[in-house]
Image: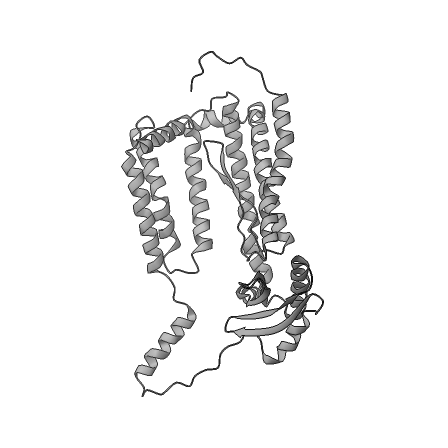
Length: 374
């Protein structure tokens, strides 16, 4: 029953905003294709277009139903529910089917198949791989000044180096000082983790930075791939268009349907009509954009790799589903996590408060009816 009501509400919104529906499908399809290409193209052999088609199938089914039966007749709830479920399972199955085998595994399989055709030879046990060479231990110890953190024991693990000792100063000061020393000696070769043990004594862990090797050859090109300014700008413009159109409708202007393209462009070519929707669009995007910029700039301050803010345009509801960033580096400590998390709401509040005051000052006061219609 609840799903039926939600579907009916969605179709009602679609009917009132039919002018934006096909634009939404176009933008959604383009954004979905870029996200699939960016996220899974390197780790699966399944064609990107096939994965994209599976993800877009529910939207295509809903669009086809609306075109055939009209927006007044809502689709069966089972159509949407089952299409989402089946497409999710099918996407996962296709992704796993084309999952690429890591190079190390391929090498091991090749060696195994080659060894089957040859006489069995007892393998010689290989020495344990250590993240640093024995000659580098002196450099590592020099990164821990005795007045900051006195190292008493260094434990070598196959994928990490654990430094245990006594803390001689504040934890935040010790982390920053030792992190600076580690970067000066080893560059971006390691990620430094500082945490407290079960005995209450803090210790440092050096973990090899797997992303450093990927960025060594072409760091500038990888940085451009991470930020993707073209994609961010395209989504920004698309969201500005959708929020402006929603703002125009909120101002009381009825937009013609999408098939009356001449009337639609004629109406939107009037600057007065667009100016009615710009205050809503610019205000909403300023709040969302400043919120995400707060996260982004704070992440850059802590040297955490992150994407630019990406807006999500939709042709109905508020004109957007918001904005987001993606962080691609581990968060070094709890202080950085807290600062990155709180920076967004604070930055958004700083912009929201004056916009709220401006909106109230320019609002029309109307009397409330005796029986509100909910």
